[in-house]
Length: 91
Image (cartoon, rainbow, N blue to C red; front, side, top):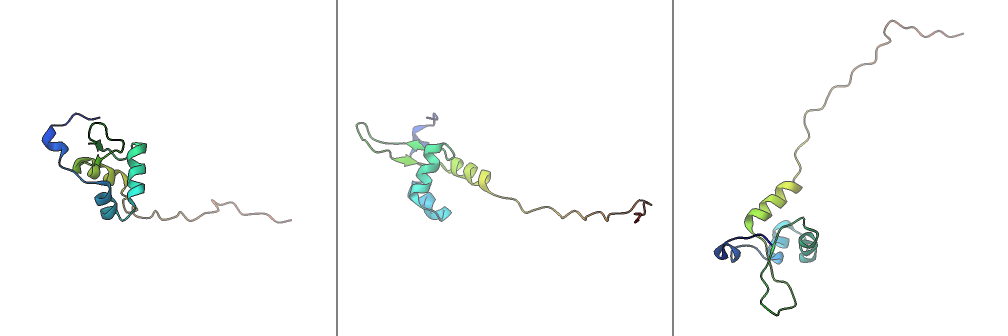
């Protein structure tokens, strides 16, 4: 668990909010948290059985940046095949 100031722990997004912003399901967000792809903080109360996840804004930005794609670069023109002075011989 990352050590952050207590004031920063209350600031963040719930898995449902992240799911809505990324247009996916909350279950998928929870899978990302469990696999370690998306960093989150468990804020469950003592004795609680279910986790209460909070995703810090910096962790969400890092996750989105890692999953974003960049547009392809300019296409390379293909070289025309040259015979190199070689003429095929047919018998």
